Every structure is written in C-alpha cells, then in structure tokens.
Length: 339
Image (cartoon, rainbow, N blue to C red; front, side, top):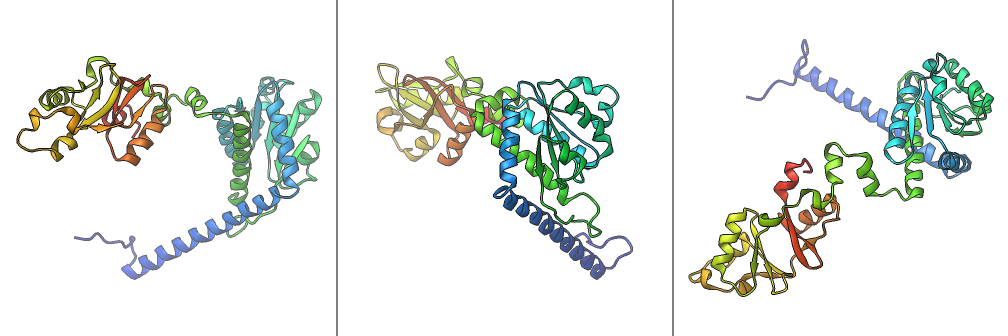
C-alpha cells in the first residue's frame, strides 16, 4: 500500500502544492547563493585578487599560526575555516572574540596572523582583538563587505567581498554572505595547500581516522603477507593451483617463475572459463593471464581502489622488485572501512 504524502490537516492536493512551494523556495535560495559565489569569482579576477594574494603570502610566511575569529554566523564559519586550514597543513585554530576579551588573547602571539570575519566590519566583540593585534604588531586580515568599516580600515589586508543579496526573503538572515565567507576561506586554504605541495601522504598524517584515514593508508598496511599469499610455480598442474587458490580464499593464485617473479595470475573466473575434462591435468601456463595488474607496498589504498574498480577485479598482487610480497583483496578494504 502506497503511504500518503499528505501532511496533517492537509488534503492530497494541498500537500502537493505545499511540496512544490518548498522546492521553488529551495531553488530560489540556491540561485541567490549561486549569484553570490559568481560575484565573488568575478571580484577575485579583479581587485580582490591582489588582496587575496597578499593574504596568502602573510599566512604562508608567518612563523606562528593562523588565528581565525568571528561572531555569530561569521563565528560558525570561522570555526570551519580554521578546521579546514588545520587539516590542510596550515596550523590554525578558532578564538571566540568574546572569550578573547576575557583572557584568550593570551593564546595569540606576535608570530601569528589573525583572520577576522565580519560582514559589516563593525562587530563590537572584535574591537579588543583588533586593538590587541595593532598593539603587538600582529598581522590582521579582514574578511568583510565594507572596506571603510572599523575592521576593514584596521586590517593589514582587507578581503572586501562584493555585496550580495541574502537568500532570506527579508534580506536579513546571513545565508549568501555566510556562504561567500566560507568560500573565500576555502579558496585561501586550498591555494596554500597547493603552493606548499601538500600531498596525499601529508593528508594521511593529519587524517588517520574514519574513511578518509583508511583511504590514505598504504597498501603495506592492509595487504595479506607470508603464507596467506596464494602462489604457484610456472609449469605446475592446474590441480595444484586450484588447491592453492581454494586454501587461501582470495579468489586467485599468482604464477611465479624460477626467480620467484610474478609472471601471471589465475582467477576463479579463469577456472570457470577453462572448465572442461582434463583441466586439472593442464599446465598453469596454458590458463594464466600474463602480466597481471599489480601494485607496490608504498602505494596509497585509494590508488589501488581506483585500479580495482576500473579493471573490475577484486584482488591484486603487491610486488617489490617483480617479486610478489603480498596480495590485497576487496574484502580487506571493506574490513578497514575504505569502501
């Protein structure tokens, strides 16, 4: 029985009309916010670009950390910006402007850079933070829409964002403005990431947990080794290869030559395709696929997953100097939470 889509005290037609109005509202919000991002992009190609480069240089050359601050919705955005910087190689943390006035200013050193967010540039709670920055010669970067505001004029570098209408129908609730602040913060963090050459391996150091941490593990961390690796010598009978494949439970067996170098692979699919009387008496060389896909122990798990998916296979041998030292299976990746 199909469940009713009617809301309480609404008939079916009223509920459908209500749903259409909700979708129309959502589309208006996205279009309005998209317009803000488009305006920000255009501004970056013009005068904002120079300030953006100057801000990036201040942050990159600082001996200390990046201190991000803001009040209200700007404060919530500032927290996220600080987290993005910290996770992409720029030491950063959030300081609440009100708490700063009650002792947390001691967290900030002359070697740091302050990134302060205020759409109006007149947030009263930022006054003590601004004064402290000027008193001790701490570089101050402003993110504001008002160049001639208190914050804008006090800043060493002002990232003056273009005016944009809020998605709120009353043009009051911070929506488009908050998204633009977040976007300029992300743009700064990624620009610095790229200029530093921050790599996937660097990500691994800072993101050891969760699915991202699992994706950034190395193959050597998840591969099966030793007796768990299914191998069979070239020239042996298929009967031996099938026994080895069944015993190790990987769904394949690697074929090695006299120098123990990997020269081929036989999968359970190969066995099915060659199933005929006398198969077990056949040579593994007649059944194996030569030059199988392989990976290195120092490769990232994310790279192996991409290969497995693109080749539509479930296992791959790990080689070092052409010799198989391990095997990685899709089930192993599921176990560590990668897929």
